[in-house]
Image 1: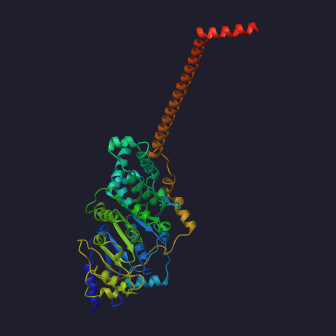
Image 2 (image 1 turned 135 degrees about the vertical axis):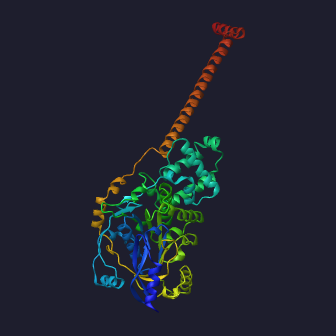
Image 3 (image 1 turned 180 degrees about the horizontal axis):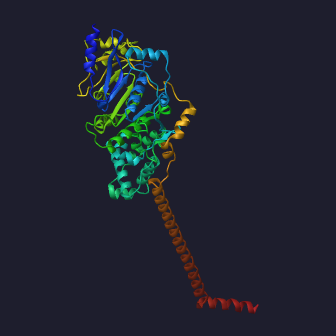
Length: 508
């Protein structure tokens, strides 16, 4: 095919007037066209995106390239690091022959650079601790996380209302468990009077689902100090956006906790950030690695909530990028919202693989230069099919692309380097300690103890009154016997009999 026409076709399709990120250069018939640069306008990066491809095809490095270039443009980034291989972005990369050769082919100078990084954790790992309170979730979102039915959701709403009416904070899971216990036992009469009857079978089911959430480690996530999402939006002294990396290596087998955290984070960001309109650049870009962990075990209600947030959050200037092996891992309702699609190679080992590849190919624009379902299996490591939105929101031409190399280290930090990053972090110190405040658990425990103490005193008083009554009855009985004896002794019959007995004795 004519490379000149192809060059003009790509350059026209990816032409930008504002700020943009260059991801690499387009390829035709296996050859890189050096000046056919694939430019992604910054203003479209709040329209969300997808990075997909088989294991080992370069998804993580593509994610790294995007994060670096966003940071370079003063845009903060949040990354979910499921596999633990993103921390190296804090240190400069190394110049190697294969890297300089690649960059010569795509005609982009290669430089090395480290970026400002915060290492974060949902668990006990070192780093900035991320927490949220139960109250922040609200009854609707908390019910959806637990996948409750309408009746059970109503119970949760009553609990939240009762705690709000009585100025009790729901901080962690022990607070809401104590509230459930209280409304079914000591406070049952009070609750029924104010809010109506509550079924114990419903509260039992809710408790079991909370225990399930606890078993996945959510008891560590819920608490204070609650994380302030403004701390994700920081810029360093050099004008680079902070890259916030949430280390999730220890929750790969806890999809419920991951889904809970993600939904909490996205909801909090949506609720607290102002509307941005068409600002020309995103305020924050979030990369969700191994995105299937969110979707695979999520209930339909939870999926609907996530899909709704994805649709709405871009108006707040926030872009979401899902990183996964196959686009079919992402629900259609979410997939349809994604503007930038970067498709690394897929492998056709089985009939199901071939079907998945055909379905994937149908998600991309038709191109006169590529047979999508064929080239998708022929891409090498560090190569990908790309289509995006131009500045007018129109899809760009499909381009098989040789991607640029990350500027930062393509490996992880050592334990000593991780410690150095954390020791310099202001956020680690800010969120280090768990704050124990008087919340619903403490208030209701005091109330229960006071009720038990009052009941004990009342029971003791009853016992005392009973004892006194018994004593009085006993005293009354003794007096009556004395009176009876005296009456007998002083009777004429008794005296006459006694005198007769004495007369007989004297005669003897």
